[in-house]
Length: 177
Length: 102
Image 1 (spheres, rainbow over the protein chains, first blue to last red):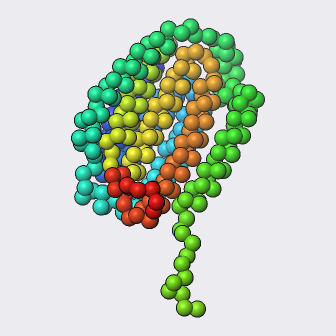
Image 2: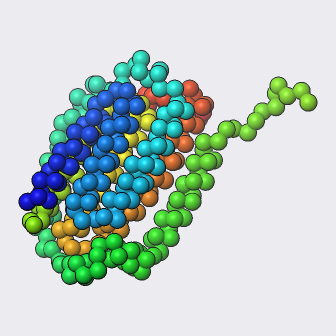
Image 3: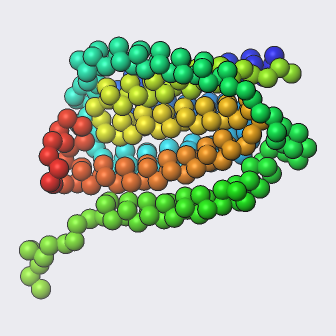
């Protein structure tokens, strides 16, 4: 019962923060709402019993990615964006029925999926030696190739971001030397 | 101690995913579009972890970790593209980016 109350508090916080992300016009406020949403989602992970994912959510998302967004926002002059309208209003009105349709479809699929029979094969194992140990051992045994591929993708993303974001090679037009 | 029903996780996940999808459509600024995309990825993470807590498995948490790592890559590359667009075209709104050759 206590867990359910905490879960409801965190999920209401997350939904309100997501509405703030979508509706506010100033990008700095949007980043603050996004940070609030990420922290509340980490709280949902903790309630669900996934301590490792929650801690990594706090470390990677709420610290690294949010700070990264703030750095980029200081590089782009967003004062120009405040003068214009920050939303597409006509497109929003047009897209709203399709979002409702998406909700209905997701609801049907989810309620069909919940009826799938749960397997509790790892439950006792998790209760005996703890969740983070089980995640670590399965991550480094069964999904080891996928883990290495993800690290390779991180390396490629770093190289690609540096290549895309660097200055274009200098033109020596005004150079008299 | 009662377990949280799976429907609760899936409802929260669907709500946040829909809000993020709506933000992808209606936002004008490119950086806020990427932030709405982060909301969508987090909603998928909630669904994975909730199904995990329901089924008693740990595979969902592993895939949630993969999604977090790939979201970091996506943020790095996407923000690099936005900075490149701004440097060449001096625009940051998504309706001003009309042609691909810079």
